[in-house]
Image (cartoon, rainbow, N blue to C red; front, side, top):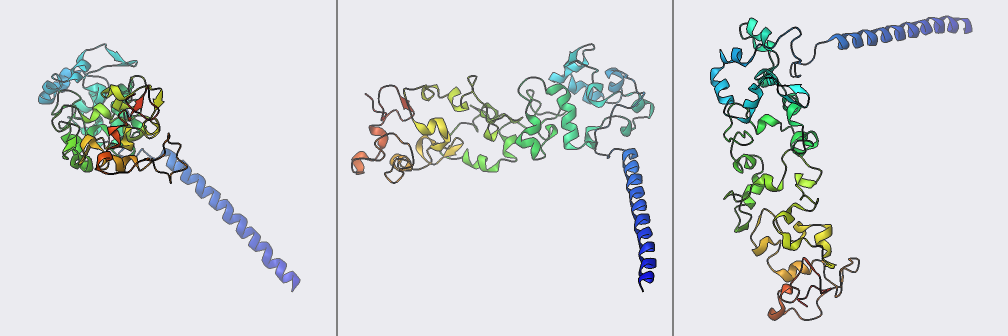
Length: 324
């Protein structure tokens, strides 16, 4: 019986060894096939090997309407031969679409030129960023909320059929932003709001759509302060006596920046209710300045805390933000 068991075990061992050898061979073959496989069709095609630059005048022969439209945009600078951006030489239309000799010889074969219609969102944006990554405006685009949510350059911009001269947008702001940001559109329709619909200020005055290091892609002032202080300079400080929420949570702890049903774009209808969200005796863990809560009744006469505590954004004379 023992000998029979040994005869069975030895063949099984050979079977396992053979199976492992075959598996390793199969994995190796698959790896070689994947290495030799062509790139996915939505990948950005490299410039055709051996293709030469033919010049924008050649492109004009078939795409005259697009060529003439390009001359009316900031991209017309690409038509100036010999110019460089970031060490990359401009070649007119071929600066974006790659060398076009193979495309021309192929009778307009679109597979032999870089066509943005056939690129993925990421690859199309990467083409744009070869030039537009200079400076600070576009430096954080790849980590921006737009890029991480599948929004690319061509979702907002159109090099050839733009509706605005500046930034080559497909639609004027704020209507362009409202296509996605419907909640903010409703907020800007409230009675107390920033005048965005009237175009006195624009969305990108406060936000950088190409990304920042701040939440909500907010911009900062030149001194790296909150963007609100660019206009509301009287609330900036520094003050001898600072109001804690202004320096920690920021302006939005009390105000709704897009719009509100309350005066001064406050979050609640009554000022004293807003103040009492922090300044109560029960909030013992909050390092609020004394007194922690109102030491008097809350009758109509004293309803607005700011009747006495005038300088709620900060004061240089009073610890409790009185006038003196």
